[in-house]
Image (cartoon, rainbow, N blue to C red; front, side, top):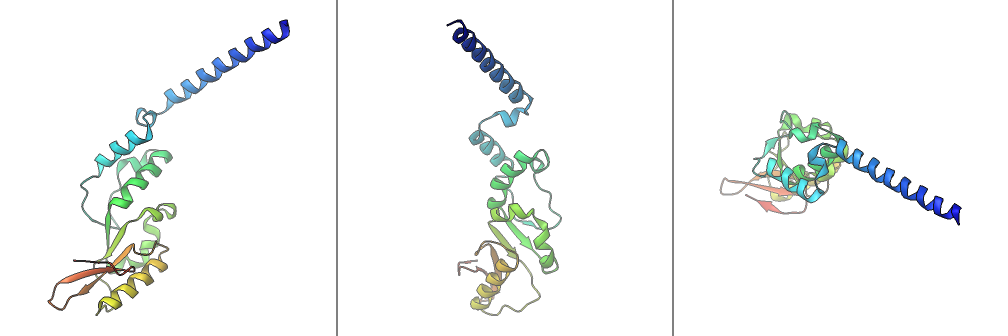
Amino acid sequence: MTNKGSGNAATGASSAQDALSLHDLDQQKPPLLRLPRELRDQILGYLFAHSPPRPILGCRLPVTMHTCQQLREETAQLYYPKKTWICLSHDLDRLATAFDPQHKQYLYAVSYAFYMFKVATPQDAILQADHLDKRHGLEKGTIWVRCLKQNGGMRSYNALGTAVD
């Protein structure tokens, strides 16, 4: 019986030490990372809630993309899906390297503002958008290609056939 009692005491002491170690590790994290993920997401969302469309190249990413790996990933998951990125024709070949490969999956919309290829009809725009999605390894419907409307305005189309003015 003595052995069992001392074993339980040792196990209890070990559990207490483990709990203290976990507490110490948690205290080493920056205060933002100690918050629950849902609250961090809300805070990060405020950082870029009303961010206008931006050019792909030369734009500055949120500072939280440069702090630590965990915040970089969490920021990417929230930031990229809420942005429309603008790509100029001379940026076309650099799109593949403009984003971390693991973050491309979060891209919501890339709008090609000017291009070197002729897009005369909505069907041309849809085919071109599909080609560019595949070329850059993006989810179908991510890239939007502009096409001149009959009344002179512009309309953008993605590979899914969705149109926006």
